[in-house]
Image (cartoon, rainbow, N blue to C red):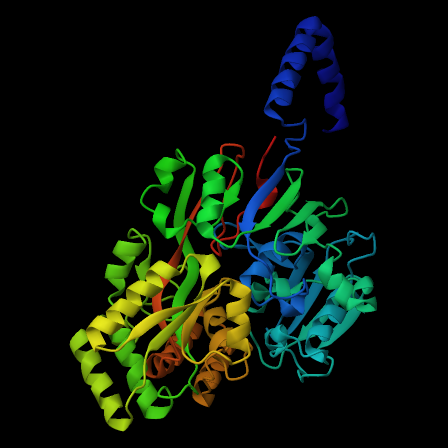
Length: 535
């Protein structure tokens, strides 16, 4: 309030006398009853569903949803994304470039970690260098920075002053700032490098919340970070990230009022969840695609034989039927490897007919593969039981069996952590659930981190120099439409080889209890928990 307004306000107060005091008392009483203080904040701890992370809480290991589901809330980033996927500055004051090759990052003033140490240029430079120097799983995300070489620091990072640093890329990239909201680009304090193992168990926060306790296989509790000065100011008393082994159990807790926010509805409840929740059910498009992946070194899935078999399996699956019967029509059949929720997406990419149901063609292709080598079944699809996957896996296996005459069955792992471990260690030989949700709103993010030859999330042993080259060309384009065309050409290669078989685009089906208000979800399915009110 400006000082010149104070005398007028004082006169009004004197004139109204005790009637104004009575009004204030009534308002205070209503606020107290609603559990909202004078600043619009509440004190309740908001619980939401999650799963046991496979890795410690380190940005360089943040390649799976179970860990990111907690890290998103205690990690500050240079930028963030709103519910519509639009970019906003979080820790950055500005990110600018004159040539799209050398970018200048300027941080906001007086930023601090929860341990009261400054968030400065070194916090980012040291964190990013550590990921690459230690060859962590997310090192691929820094491949575009000049001087990238595993085991070494990035020569493209230069400190200008305490609040400013520059990032030189190996080639111009117009969308570079777009990716900086991903948790892998979060800063690290000096304390992290003194005992990185201990830090991974209880990290120092740069975001709106800080970790109070991580009880493995049970929960991560978080409290508001008093040092945080960004746009995600907590409006509640903290968060509880609960680890469920069954989505049905989480849903039952939601219905019973024992869970506040659920980011995924189990298949069994999709027809009724909106009425069950009395208007507190949420459905919206999501930047994600679900596929089944097949390691291209798996016997009978190599070379020309494997190419034929993957195409046959894809065309033997009636996606529309599975979506109708299992998901109550809440998904959309996949036409490509990205998502219609991302700007630049296009339908009708040449080769996409391989994703259409065509049982006659599927049988023809399978027979050609059999002429090369006889398949020794069964065809297996591995999935994690804690993610409500059995219904759709059984459905597509039945379609493969019925339309190709091939024994097919699901292979259940108790949780995501065990499934991811088997895939990463290459001990799993066969198909597996391959889900991808956008780390940041870009077509490239669905392609580069997943299918590039040296990407850690490339679980398929897919390697194509032509594909890699097209992605680099797309990144260097200043015109988003021209970039999208390069990515579409790259997808033609994927559609021909099918290292993964896209099934459907994901959607957000979520809900919340009657104990909380102001619940929203971003396009990557993250609940916007800092805004949630809970008395």
